Image (cartoon, rainbow, N blue to C red; front, side, top):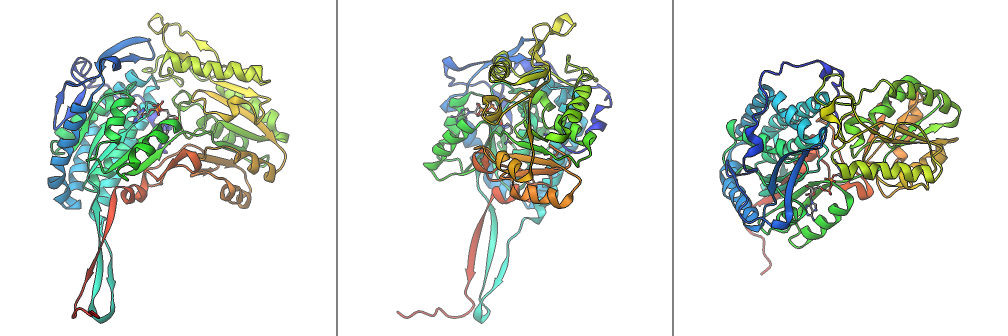
Length: 512
Ligand code: NAD
C-alpha cells in the first residue's frame, strides 16, 4: 500500500550503506533488547527463507515455541510499567529519534525488504517512507492523548483517562513486512503499550532490523520484541493470558482462528484481512487517469496487495478504448531484477504462491475468460534470476461475476475486467461479495462519485484515484475484510482504553 509521493521514489538513491549480511546468519528473535536463538522450537516447523527473485535460500531458522513466546511476553510485560509511565511527549520524542534513525538507514531497510519479499526497490522505499511517516505522525499524537472532564451537579465531576492496554501482539503478512510492523508498533508504542511482533515466516528479516533500530534509538529493552515462527507460534501468542490485544494482518481464514483464540480472554483485536475490491469506471471519467488507477489497483507489489481493486467494472461504451490504453501501458512495465531502479514488476513471494496464481488464471480461461495479456511465468535474461518467481501482469477480459477468479482473492497480478450498463446494476454487483476492504470509482460527475461510494460496502474508498494510504487516513475493512481500523487517530483509539473516574465534592447521598 502506498503513500502519495510515488514517482519521487523512482529516483535512484545513494547506496552508501547496505544491510550487513550478518543479519542473515544470526539468530532471528529479538527479545528484551538482544538477539536470541529460539530455545523451544518445534522441529517440524523449520523456516527456510527464500529470495524470490533468485529462488535461492537466504537463511534458515526455526519456529519459536512456548518458552520463547513466554520470554518475549514477559519481557514486554516487565517493560510496560516504565514505558507506560513516561509522558506522551517523552515517548513521542523517542519515536521521532527512531524516525530519524530510519531516515539514515532507509536504503538498508528497503534492500532487505526487496531481498526477502521480491518487490521492486522503489516500492520498498515507499514502504519504508510509510514507516517513517507512521512514527512521526504518532510521535506528534502521543502528547495529545488525553481524557475529558465532565461537570456534574453540586460541583462534583468526572474525568476520563486514556490508558494503554498493556502487552500488545502484532502479527504480520508477507506482502508489506516492514510497513505492517511499523503501522502496528508506532501507535501501540505512542500510547504507552509494549509489543511482541511476529512477522510472516516468509519475510522475517526487516522486522528484526526495525527492532534493532528501535533499540539503538532509545526505545528501552523489552518495549518492542520480535519473535519468529509460523502459525503455531502465532497461536501461542494470541492465546497467551498476559496479552491484552492482538493486531493481525493476514488472510480471512487465519483472522477467524485468531478471533476465536482471543475470545477466551476477551482480548481486544484488530483484524486487517483480505479483499476482492471493486473499481468502477464510468464512461464520463478521465480515461487516462482511470487506466493509471486500474494499474495502481492491480499491479503494485506483483498484485499481492489486500486492498487491490481486482474486479474492474468498466462501463460498456468505453471498454474498447479503456482496454487499448491499458494494454499499451502494461507492455512497457519492465519485469525482472527487483533491485534495478527501472523494474516495475518484481518476483512473487514463493513458487507455491506463483503456481496458485497461475492456477486461478488457467481456471478463468476454462470458465470463459479471454486473456488479453500476461498471466505467464517469465524467465528474465539475467541467468541469476532464471529460478525467480516472475509473472507477467495479466488482464482477463470477458469475465463474469460467477467465475472463481472474480469471486476469490487471487493475490497476484491478475485484473478481471467486467462491463456494466447502469449505476444501480454495478453497485449491486460490486457489493455481491463477502469481502469489503476497499473500493473505488472513476467519474467526472462528482455527485455520482459520492453517491456510488456511499452505497459501496467497503471500509476504504477512493474517488478518481486508488490505493493511496496517507498515514492520517484510517484504514480497514467492512464485512469479512476485518475489524477495527489502523492508521489515523483510529489507531490511537484501538491501542487505548478509557477509564471513567467519578469525583464526589459533597457528602455521600445514601438512603441506607
Ligand atoms: P496468513 O493468514 O496465512 O498469515 C498471516 C500471519 O498469520 C503470518 O505471520 C502467519 O504465520 C500467522 N498465522 C498463521 N496461522 C496463525 C494462527 N492460527 N494464529 C496466529 N497467527 C497465525 O496470510 P498471508 O498469506 O501471510 O498474507 C496474505 C493475506 O493477508 C491476504 O489475504 C491479504 O489480503 C491479507 N492482507 C491484509 C492486509 C490488510 O491490511 N487488510 C494487508 C496485507 C495483507
